[in-house]
Image 1 (cartoon, rainbow, N blue to C red):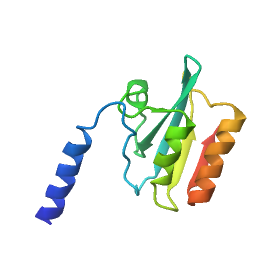
Image 2: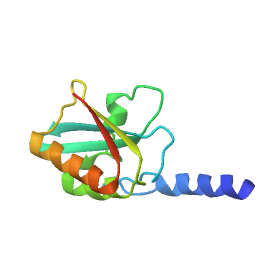
Image 3: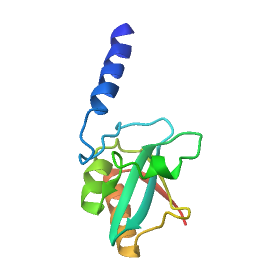
Image 4: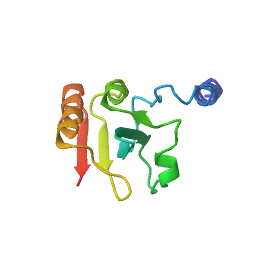
Length: 122
């Protein structure tokens, strides 16, 4: 048990040492699923995939540069790293927003191919 706790702590510390520009690392499985957020800035769409919790996330937490994912091309490998059957809840309350329908369909396709359960709160 001590070894497990120690391993988790080491992974958390090492995960915090990654550069801000790197693709965020998410655990492949989450008991409460994941929360997906999206927003546009200067003509570019950004995403944030956070572990699901019982609390609302702040805008600063959602748009944290260390977790912000720039574009669908960088979101795809993050989604593909999740275990099949995981739940993803996508919301975009103001000032966040949903991307154009074509981008939404791309995310839906990635999730379908990976066996992820995507719920979009429009």
